[in-house]
Image (cartoon, rainbow, N blue to C red; front, side, top):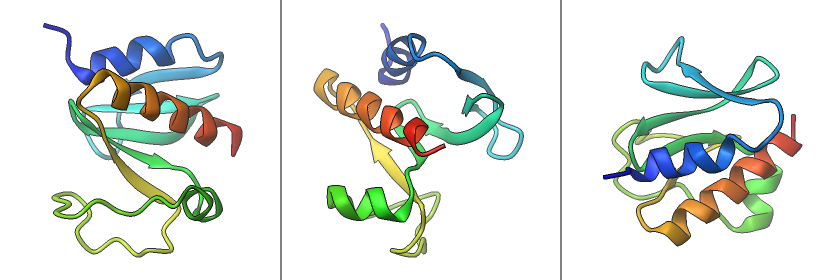
Length: 104
């Protein structure tokens, strides 16, 4: 069975300059754009993504409750945890990744 992470990575493979590589800090898989890390997976259905404070605020995104990895993350952080399980949530996560890449 294909995991949500695998579905997302398949979608992201079409974005020029984006690569998925072993994370030097978080372990697991990290996302890079032209050698600069902008996200990493916490598990098969959660991505920690650097979107910038401005984009997070403009989209009305909020840090998810019950965060295991970043329970005390500031509301002004440029990073946001994105959770996805369904196919539609995977598509939404892919769109957020595209926005993150546009900020780099």
